[in-house]
Length: 283
Image (cartoon, rainbow, N blue to C red; front, side):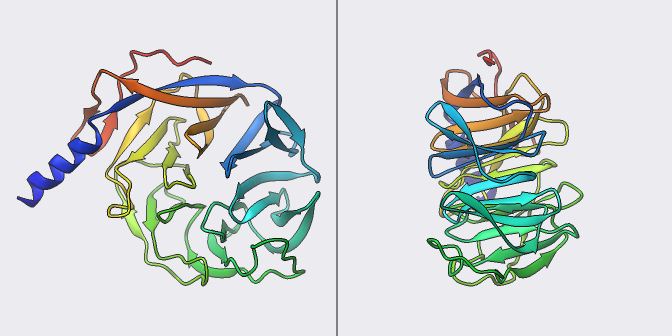
């Protein structure tokens, strides 16, 4: 009975399929990474400059040599080419304590990141709210062996150096405790990003994009992976307010939106869903 009930639950979440239409967004040359949150979009380029999208125009953010930027409830944070951590304060980035290779500001007012030795770090909302600025932010190290980390409404996701995916809902905005991670089987990923509404998207080592389906309060880790058909190889993605933002390996920025289609998705025995590609992707 449990097996049948689980199968029916999967079908209920896959009853409506969506096709994605992607359009090139001009204004940033040779983009390398992108992040979206709270209606804002930030990106970095090959020259390690950072940019903010306002309306239809990109504006250079102050500060140089940033290789990764993130925007969310915790503010706008960046990591430079020397792994130093920066936070945008009013009109300029301020240098802060800590050495990270990747930072994420999308949690419930707390920030997380991954260091060069694959240690994970967390900064509670006591230090991220408002314009709170300290010379030494007390980043808490709580886990080893992760290379990418992102948090959203229902919990946090991470990837280890072997491209395996993990999930936890135990990180708190008030205290950065050492959580218990659950291995999420199905596909290898090199990037995983969580939207503020809990939506999860990942990029495989071969540049394909997948979305995690079936995520809600009762099943925060979701049910299966559904491929998002994009006609170019992707290096990075982010999701916010119903829009998927992607950076191709050639440096193009794409904005993708989805709409219902008639053809149902195909489910394989591994729990990976492949959506039909009869609707062409526009770039």
